[in-house]
Image (cartoon, rainbow, N blue to C red):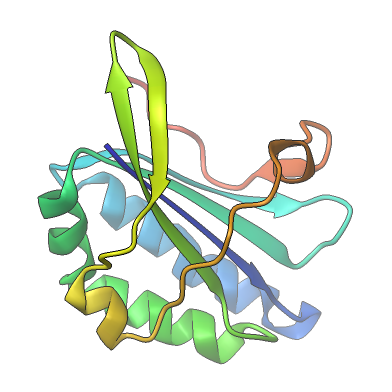
Length: 144
């Protein structure tokens, strides 16, 4: 399984426009056959800071996702509306019998990610990112 995380800080004046493109991205991405989950959250302590979490079945699903026109449109809009370059991290998660046994940073990024100029950044400690009281869900998780 492939896990993609992303983050962007958006100025107050751009929040409504950013949320429109984020909702469209989440909605269309969830319809892709290789998508396991896709959500985004807004930080309650820092309004305008958004965090994205995606799970994909395999590398082929990620490559298909990054080839979609709406994905390119979202990345362009995110760069235009964000205060700084949005962050993107891609990781391959090895799962056995429902347990995560190994996690490694993807060093061989897909050509499409390299082409659109996204960069891999180290993941922050889970206590910093996933503090339950801090993040407000912006798109409801899909029910399986």
